[in-house]
Image 1: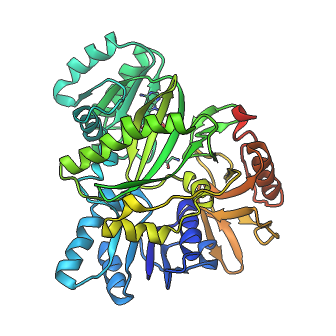
Image 2 (image 1 turned 60 degrees about the vertical axis):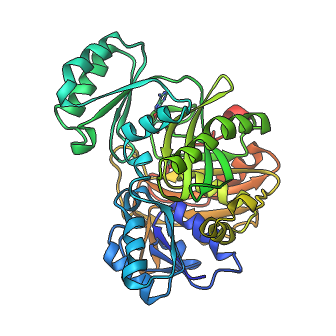
Length: 428
Ligand code: AMP
Ligand code: GLY
């Protein structure tokens, strides 16, 4: 198979690393990729939302499998666009990703809440408001229990969710989102929901909208500071397997959440051929859905792919030809931990174009160094984003795996480098 992956982060580096190992893989391209990806695949200078250029590339290079990393092109309709390329241009490949309509599970919080409610999927109680019922919303918030969760309906680069401890703050956020258009169109509708108290975890599924395979799970550490303090980030590290996600817990996830979701997709005619990322809260042993994402997580992919032994291209083929239910999923033994190195100041303002040293160090077999926000400048690799690198290690314990990843990061330097040393702390 010839494969094109869209994206340029640690997630795409991990997907490329996994796919490159498949004996089904002939040519592997990543658009636009990064310097780490360039070591194992061919980078292509095309943006993830440049659909015309993606189509031309797929036709010219006989791409069989187009794997979409980030949510943006999915919500913008890359799946539907490439379906048209099949009909109109004779493209013979398939996309790993949902249709534009089904990508609303991530693209619109209101859409996903309604979907969950219709399909009896456990999630926090909620109401939705726009400018039209703004006063009603204020009254609703005024009477709501605390803390209270406000979510911009549309994509807001991970910044559209605010958890307020006071009614006054919630009302201000509500006004900022709807009236002051803090996130533009994305916050013209706001979902107000109950706060779920528990431990947040992620489960990853590959589906064709009828059958599915669970391909992994992880716990992500979202806060910038140790002990889960400070601002939310895209993710500072991950572990898998998660000790409390045993077969009894996963059975509840499957019965109460995954199966009703897949049945809902099929019943409602939502076309889905790709990953579903279930963002869950473990509320006293009862999993509830916080959010759906229509893609893999980042940095979760960097910890899930190394643990997954099953060939990913075979799974994509099974998804495409309707045999996913028969697929065997195997996981490697041991504990996996990813530690993410970020640029100083992230998730606030941070600098770019800082030279990185130590990337050429000898990495042991039980570790992987994934690049995220990096770019090549002559012989030097520079920082090019907030999250710069992700180091994954395998160990006999979570603690051992984290220690090993930190050991590798100690030999890497860029001005302002920052990473959490306490990933997996509650499982020590
Ligand atoms: P989302 O974009 O929906 O994933 O929300 C971002 C983050 O806010 C989640 O990863 C959770 O940590 C937190 N969050 C969202 N909804 C809730 C909720 N109902 N209760 C508690 N925390 C939440
Ligand atoms: N790590 C969270 C996400 O990918 O959305």
